[in-house]
Amino acid sequence: MGLICVDKLEKYYSNSRLLAVKNLNFTIEKGEFVSIVGPFGCGKTSILNIIGGIIDDYKGSIMINGESPSEARKKRKIGYCFQKPNLLPWLSVLDNILLPQKIANIREGNEKAIELLKMVGLKDYALMEPYNLSGGMQQLVSITRSLILDPEILLLDEPLSSIDEINRSKMQLKLLEIHKKTKKTTVMITHSINEAVFLSDKIIILTPRPATIKKIVEVTFLQRNEMTMFSKRFIRYVKIIKEELINGQDN
Ligand SMILES: Nc1ncnc2c1ncn2[C@@H]1O[C@H](COP(=O)(O)OP(=O)(O)OP(=O)(O)O)[C@@H](O)[C@H]1O
Ligand SMILES: [Mg+2]
Image (cartoon, rainbow, N blue to C red):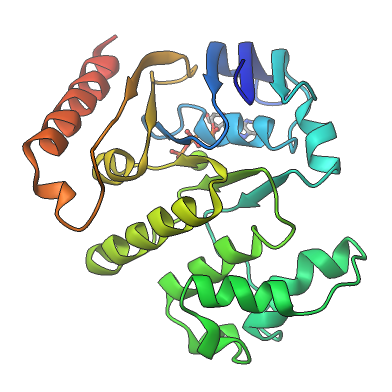
């Protein structure tokens, strides 16, 4: 059985009388990196918010290791990284990363945060305020912050969408490295097919709203590095996913 089991999920927003998600079924295994791709407004963030226990009014079932998402969230098993870094400008990078510990009233030292900053290559920025960092680095701080309570699951909503292409490639390598080192089960929303193929073990392709599964593609490479994106295998995966998204629009 998977770590995250989604069964006949449906989300209806009664205030806007809008069906965002319909009959959604999938499972995610422990340690997997899964991307969710789909057209604008199809329901991706709604799905992530439900998995993350932020929205708890839905139909169908979601089980995370046998628990509901809100139970898992209360036990701090889920790290959530929003599309914007949401750093507090008056706190140092280090204090921003320590914030979830403070909010949860956990009395621990800085060691873990420093360790994480080392891992992502931002240790030298620990005492600076966020405005000294580029947008990409701020996003990396935000991803680092979502790891501080050592969650089992990492949820990322378009984490690299506001970063230029060259730095985005660097950040994708960082995400790959974070995943290799932490082995966290990761669910990422992205509009970049290349990014999804490069990082994921599995890609969930959604239809236009109401989101339902168009196709799930398993992605395997012998290894992933800077050259992977130029391989025939990579280009073949990109083509398959693009075609699914294009003919999903016509339905
Ligand atoms: N709190 C809400 N109340 C009412 N309707 C909402 C709410 N949140 C989202 N919606 C609607 O649900 C639909 C799906 O929204 P969602 O944010 O999940 O899409 P998305 O796939 O993440 O979009 P994008 O690619 O633009 O980020 C949209 O039509 C949106 O307007
Ligand atoms: Mg969204």
